[in-house]
Image (cartoon, rainbow, N blue to C red; front, side, top):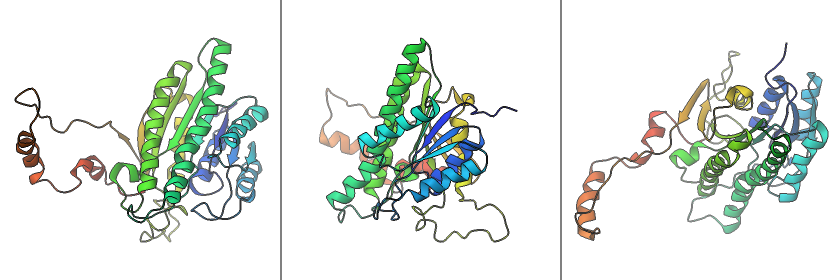
Length: 313
């Protein structure tokens, strides 16, 4: 019996642990040959020496289950290393079909305490890392499409966060990077659609070493039931988005956790005011806009996130 991703190859970044590991195993289980990328640093803030162990262990887990996998130890925030990662997939499997961007670090701090390096490092790994791999994958798909004279199968699944949707007071760098990833995703989706390539972003909620503080109060079930915050709840959506079945899903943002998937609409206009004359005066703006917010609770801008029951993740 054929599997949805038979004959395809995939890259999963940050796949040595947590979400990336679950996603790599899911794609392999659906038939894909996988390049397991992880820089292997032990600290969730990107500290410590790089190690091949996390990526190698996941690749071996896939091979032990009968799948195909190779490990790549590289920093996706480095442009050349990201290029080498995509080239490894092409050299090993003949082509690249799926790119899952998941690698990231945390350096949490309130905006008034955050250092320049804490800002830059998180933006670099998350947002620049997503750009780097996407750039080389897009170049590969565009060249293939031009050579074949028709569309190719290309899928990009990027990892955003609810920190971008609903705010996260102690994570201005992380929230900004995750918001930037959504912008990168929608731009990429428009640019590559003509080649048969789709780009979508997910906001996963899962218990990993990056979110251990966020979900510290949510206990793991002790009766054998799957943890509602297990990464295994997220992985099937990634597998679906990577497949031919999701050909019409493009430029979308999806929230996923605990057996739930929510498709997030683009922002809508909540209110509109027109000037009485050629342009607004200060007093006119005060008369129009101030009453609108007078009786509204703080952060009502994010009502859509509240309706979904979304929190920082």
